[in-house]
Image (cartoon, rainbow over all chains, first blue to last red; front, side, top):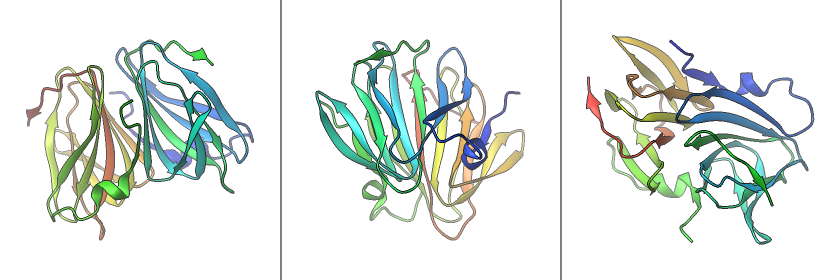
Length: 114
Length: 114
């Protein structure tokens, strides 16, 4: 059986001071990753033409990119949904790293920077 | 544009003392819900024949059902992956409600109790 349970603090321990994506799992339908974004770092704005990307924020604060220069606050305890084609990205604005799970479907994920 | 940002504390405020699922969004590919499970309550064991169901725990503690009577601890800051066909469920074991986001794909979701 594939691993099913992940502790996010184990995944982010000792990561370098850059925005870092760690893939938890991937199958033919979905994948799950953990993003670790130190203060001031970012996940640049992008979109996926065919794939939804749902972010669940576990720690920290950020400025979420909605596209066309629009942003909104994002912080622990929030969920951000980017349906296929919707621009998303984030800059970590708090004093601690921004950490979120990102669940994407369907596979494969094509990524277009904006 | 559909709503994209959700604050989970707003979703769970004032819910009754039973396990309660609130749908954040649903489209043709994925959906996202918030489960609120008060102490001692449960999401009964089940599986989805065609759909992955990924849980990201935001608050509380639980006993995650893996199928065939097996369980493992689940708590805030953990991710639990149930690929299609894999049994999952949870009982809230802590003093505060267990709260988690559940992202599912692909749609539609068929549910089989076990």
